[in-house]
Image (cartoon, rainbow, N blue to C red):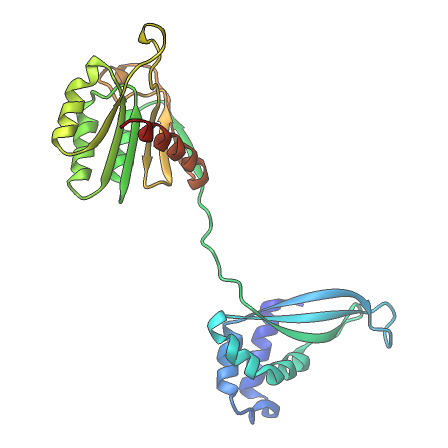
Length: 253
């Protein structure tokens, strides 16, 4: 039985069938059903009389939560109209009508993953420009003035920005400029034998639901290398980068 056709029929019956015109709150019932959905739930139990092997079926009327109280008040009328419209088949017969809350729709989760090998700087810039609330950057080297200018432009529009960079001499100029602009920047010292180990990340988180990551540093030379930049619009995936960022960020006093 088509669920939409069933509800539409019930509403049309309420509007035009004289049998139901005397229902005290008929207009409210029409409004309620027009905003509801129905489910047909076959049961294991047999009817036990009439057609052989016929099973019971429950009709579940799912009403919007704000209208649930009215639905319960009109339960008897709902039962009458559903029973009247219900079409018994050889397989199923109506056992009862249940009123339940309509589950609130959640927006579909949008997940997109891409990778680019050309125009990497333009991809980073577009990601920065799309930011509405916050940008977290973790890059080993940062000397690209074009990307720097885009970050500062966003900061001046109220976007919260945090930057983690490795302690490299080539980062000094950018670090000082970021600090003068009031950007929250932290320099990560190298460690290990002869200070050969460093914070080597290259990722940028935007609004906690988009990340750009790969081999591409925000340096002047990176635009002339063969590099990889992957992007992801995937909140669950991005949260892993955010956890890593915060772990490093909180280690630096």
